[in-house]
Image (cartoon, rainbow, N blue to C red):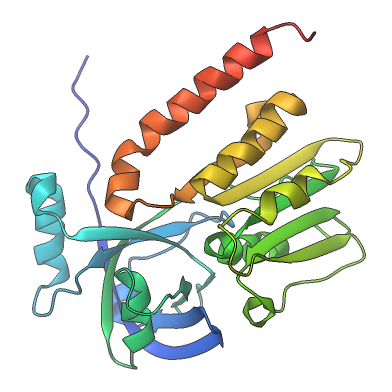
Length: 282
């Protein structure tokens, strides 16, 4: 059998066209320019890109592609994963919403300081979730890191869909305008000084699940996501194919550390679930 060649990584370069503060902790950046000529999304509402940091002044797209495709991973730029909030294929404008917390992190401070004409390199897109048109109802839940993906999913729901939406943010100033409809039930949860997930998990747990086929999207801080995954998989015995559940980040870990351990962490959770589901009730 012929050995498969490694997938070639393509680097895109966006030029900041505009910036807008949506809330105290979220900034919207719109990228454009000829560096997006090769970019397109895969059509999923949870499309994402991997931003390359630090922003390497003087390096060309070709330089970065050479590094990513030929150099050892230890020599790669640092990556940060962000949801595609909107892709305007006609105007070739890419919108990304950034959660910001002052000087903390890489991408947030960059977004806070970004000005028209700045450039940003990234790879992508990836992603595989879109709201199922066969579902009787949808569950969308997460903290502010999942808010862009949840907002995009709401925009992608079929007409007349039913969705129960739970979004945990620091406080009321962090709420954003979201698509509405007769069947769209949005619950904003304010954690205040509480730990991330402290408002989200009990709120979702208290939901009286409607009858019918569910399609769930649960993303955000890993420990809260783990608790909600247990609720869905073990307590409600939902099959994995009806769920898109993943930890975007984990308290106490930077993204590099979290991404290096995420696969093992999820395999442990899956083993725990299989053991619980194989054990007869009572």
